[in-house]
Amino acid sequence: MKKTAHVTNVVICFHKILKELWEDVQGLDDFQAKVSVMETVDKFFELLVGPLSEFPLFLRDTYHSAIVQLTHLQIELISWSMENFEVTVEGVPLPLAPQCTHGSFFTISLKEQKLEEKKIPSGMETDTMETDDRSNSPVPLLPSSIMLLDTAHEYLGRKSWCCNSSGALLKLTADILSGELEKIPEETHPFSEDIQQSLEQCFYCLYGHPHKRTKAKHLQDHGVEEVPLTWSYGKCMFAYFKPKMLPEFDGYKTSSMSGDLENLFLRITKVIPSGERPEDSVEKIHAYIDGSSDDVPTLSAGVSPNSPVVTEIFYLLADYYFKNKEFGKANRFYINDICFCPNRLDSWAGLALAKSGRLELKLNSCDAKLRAGL
Image 1 (spheres, rainbow, N blue to C red):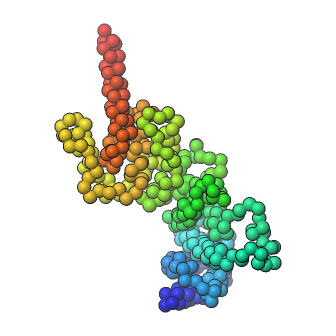
Image 2 (image 1 turned 90 degrees about the horizontal axis):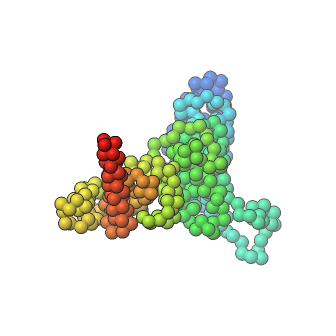
Image 3 (image 1 turned 180 degrees about the vertical axis):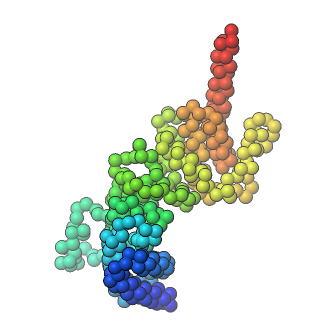
């Protein structure tokens, strides 16, 4: 209860301060003065994100009006700032919209949870429910909280602002949408296609995947600068884009991944933490293959891959290069995969065939030079 009261007091206090700042900035004529006030507003939002994200966990009907009033004020601020700051000014209002939307999302999401908990049993419907378009719709509709995130992305994208604040809004959206897809299997999800398209748009704006030349029709180029890829979002993107089934070493080339995924997966391998890369195992595997050691490769002591990324990404890259006859790269990634999965038969078989293919290319090359010399 103390934590609930604390969060509530923070929201109420912040609403009063924000309202005063909102009234002040509307009466200002000097542009720099407006900038100064909006920078202050931005700092307040940064402080509020933590308590606000906890607020739904403790919200009761008693405190509902406070968060609703704050949300309305947030929306007014977003609309006003985007209309009045046409010039890109550092800190204004670029960080503001992501923070406001963050708070608004939790508010609307909470309302949906409360409605879900209060579902009226069959035969007890009220007049309000009978006239609710969303409840009577024969086609399931996106939750309002997710629609808010989509609208915010679209709105900011028109001004090429959706990746400002280090992509705060799109990272929040990607987290929410990924979690939504994990709740229900894709085959039975009522609006999986809509969520997938929204998630792909987030990834496209944040990290430029897929490439502009191969992007799907539903992806829009908002003309934004990409943000650096991190390990946490690398895992998220890998989980979403990876093939549903790992290809076999002797499978068709079409079963392997695309060139776009090659570029993405290479970027992800560069952000894998050093603690999840047993580099010392590479030398042991080379020694075993060359015959200089009889020790069969095993997973290094104390190494336990914590992410499915490291147990699959190297194999997928190796398989792609092998089936595209880039045997040198295939060798390297097969060995990397064996570091994590020493018992994977497909990697050993693929590695042997890749080495054989590389040797064959060298022999053919030598034969061609000998004939030329004659």
